[in-house]
Image 1: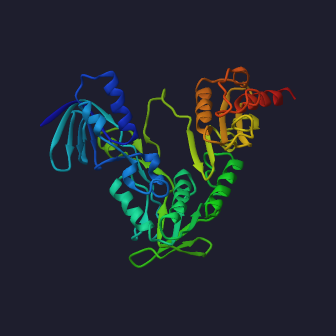
Image 2: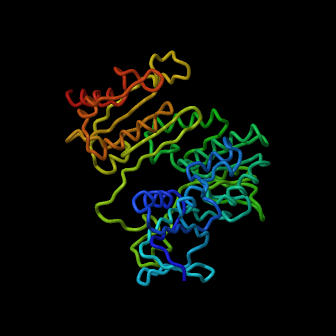
Image 3: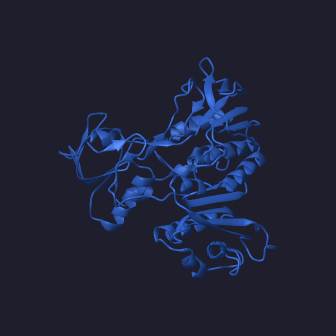
Length: 400
């Protein structure tokens, strides 16, 4: 039986981050990473394989750095995890003993119980380079594509498939979303509308308030039937409606877990949710609560907004004149609970700053007087910096 000091089960984002941290803090320990795919893909880069990168091979995280650092990489599927004996058993019957173990199995695509979802050329988004290549091979000659799901995965896939038209067959792309807006669970309504307009400008037909009833075809998909009876021609269907936690090993190992929420964490752990995407020419990012989520949680909020160019002066090349920040503060103590940004590529970093502010329980006053680094080519003007002005506008609203 082989042995290791620390076993990391899972080789995607969480597993890689765990290994990197272990190498920094415990460089003398024997570390083994276990994954069941040949190579690790950049998870968030998967949509860009199809339109921007044009190949799966450019979205691979090489093993070189880990191997050079002495990390042992095992490419096998774990069949059993025994926490009492500290033994991992693989599908081929081989075993590995460990002193410490990190379970970082991540997520798997959620596939809804839609009739026909198992037909050929119906795909979900898996973190397996061979599977992603199959999607590419199917999309390249296809003319009619239906993307099911208007969250981040579906929106980014639809946008990137549209970009395939410049190096493959012309595409007729429909994005089907059952909610009133795309990105609705993470973003403010007005930002969702901007994303939809950007998709349409890229050639994607956005069909909101639409539910898929069935996928039809003999062995291969030919059409998608909606709940209202409409039928959409389909050479390829991409299902991108979200992910479910990979809990099989956790449950097998005796951990408390459920299919929706994953492994039950300690009460001291939590996540506020921070997101970013780019649709067409617009970047959209968010952290914390939306206005709708605040209502559902019975949190009364004060809203502060600011719109300004992402560069100064706004006449600079590639400046976006109407970059918007929307901040949500608790009415009772003015602590920030959410923030949303739409505009240039700095949107994600602004959302990161908002995320830090939420975690630090900063108030509207804190954000209105904070010192911000500015530069003509990188940010809004120091007198129009959106975070500061939005916070100040929220304070003004409390005075009325």
